[in-house]
Image (cartoon, rainbow over all chains, first blue to last red):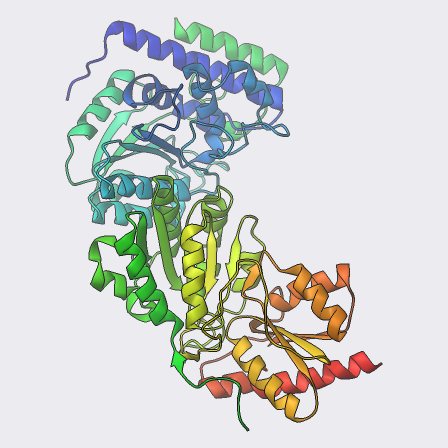
Length: 284
Length: 319
């Protein structure tokens, strides 16, 4: 499957992703709370979904025909909020309210507060099951919309993920696209703790395939590869699709990349300045 | 002894299966969600009668409840049913985060609730489900006294938009409400008047409470029986009224004494109208597998236990 992205579109997606990363770091710095590593590994995929792949309309966030997105790794909420803000679902300034009292931007996505969120998540392993329910609901009602769901590799340690995998396969949910944000780290690392296990989940490709899913493995920071994977996913019949997106935790900022402590560390003023500088340079 | 309790026994689970089949045929929104217990819970009535509306999620309760939440966001009304023990303990985080917090229109049927679960023992008994579900914001908690009330509750739940938990019994029970009875959401029902003491009961213990009250009447003790089909939101006015009218309360439920109806009633009494009260329920012990009568006797839920507890409570009143 080829990429149909124009050079201009790729430039736009890269710019938006870079802006989103800056917003993530600024917001977490401002709030003094939140996550950085996971949202930054997910940013390029989220940007592609909301600026290219998904059939959505920020002015009509509850449209019945819209594509759905579930952020199963709910602690990466700020990454989703940054992209939603850039896409026009909420004012960018509202990100300043993140994690504060009465904010629509809760630490983990709350579908009842912010239009544009298709499911409440936060307790790991649950979002993928809800996405199965949404995709199944579409099939049962003959609806054409598609459901996308991003899970984490740390999250994949939850047994519920594999319960969901089985049922999606059983009901042949080819309208469901999972994306594994495969950044190989979790809150307290994992990598290096045990030599035989380099990532939170052992051989996800073999695992998802053995559950009957169509698996596509890509570089989750390469917009052309992301685009190609989504195009391929659209053509798959009778199977759900899992895109294993190889990513870098903390992507875009040298001192955050692949450092598990940046899972939820708060940047100092100096670190914020340095991070923004790097992101601006990287976007050129 | 002549009992006020009619002897016609009907199973709540049979009525559940029949009623859900009817809903599934009438409403495009209604789906039955099973965790591989359909032939026990009678969800198989839908599987056999309207297979398109039956979804088999396998032995995976956590996924089952999250899938139900996802289905509800697409406009469907899933009715998920499994044993109350698994619903209330294996899948409670999923129920809280994805059903109760977002207030999604999912109906949860806790089958085989309480102590009498068909000789399956403590792993399959549910003596904490009221306590657990009652603690969740947005959750409605119901426990029918008999099959007729179960049908009426389901009709309510079908129309109500939001999460509802109904705990039902495995075995057939006498039909105790008369033809004029109508379940009212959030309202207690006085099934028997009395002036000395009030038994406030829920679910299957209402039947035994009525029988106990009848026996106590013959001994000259006038016992009111207030049935509490809605455990949450609780009819606090009815509790206060009973406390004022008889001055002493006994609660009865097929549940642990911790966190269930007895606790809920005690909370109201302490805050609004303190009077002596005692609870009939399973004490702080794990149960076992045995026949129903033996279990009721050993774990303190039998008619005789209710009679004795009422007498103990009256002593407190006289102090």
